[in-house]
Amino acid sequence: MRGYNRADIWDEVWAEYDARQAAHAEAEAAAQAMATRGHSEAPAFRPLSHVLPAVLAGILLVAAWMALPWLLGARLAAPIAARDAAALLQHFDRPAAMASLRAGLAAEVPQSEGEGARRFFDRMAGRMAAAWEEPERVAAWLSLRAAGGEGTAAALSSLRSARPLGLTSFRVEYGPAGEASGVAFDIAWRGEGFRVTGLRFLDTPSAPAGVSGPALAMR
Image 1 (cartoon, rainbow, N blue to C red):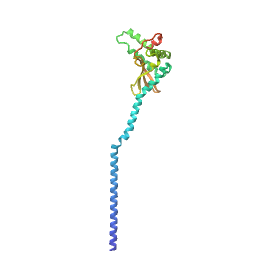
Image 2: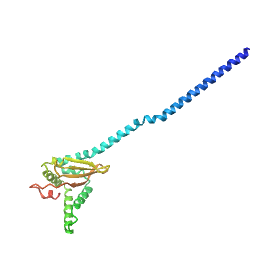
Image 3: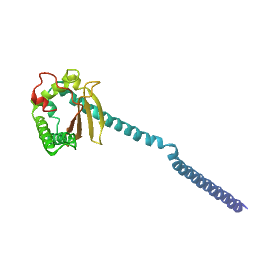
Image 4: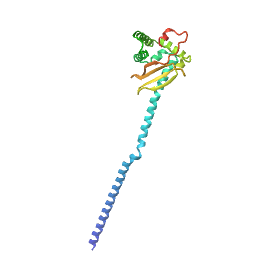
């Protein structure tokens, strides 16, 4: 009888142990299922925390890109206002800028003009472009263009507009407030920095008395 009772006791112990093991296994399975469900549901609640930094970074990059032409324009405005032709020309990619100037001047010649007139205008465009190789003529040009507006170089150096032409190229326009006269510079990245790669004259002001020929030859 004693042996029988002992066997029954062990059976009960093992049965209780098996029940506990089964309950423990079920609890682990339930916990794992909940964890798996939580991982699968997490992206539905957390994408904003991942996307927001990227969106903010993109906004900052676009804002910096839109502000860049104004900063570049301000850098050119300083030597224009000071009539410092040498400092202004340091920002030029001269071969590209002169080629742009010649092409722009040639495009202004009416197609109806005869061959002789076109040759004359081509030679004049060449002289005008060559004048930009000489700082003293550029200085005279700055004086002429300023006098055509409000009478000061600061008027010509007024940055009227700045806009992107591409990812690394921009156009800045200077001139007296309320005037059509002025100049526009195209600026592009050239490896070592941003350089003026093109220029065009805006509506030409009338020449004031006493202005010398070299300045007029520049437009």
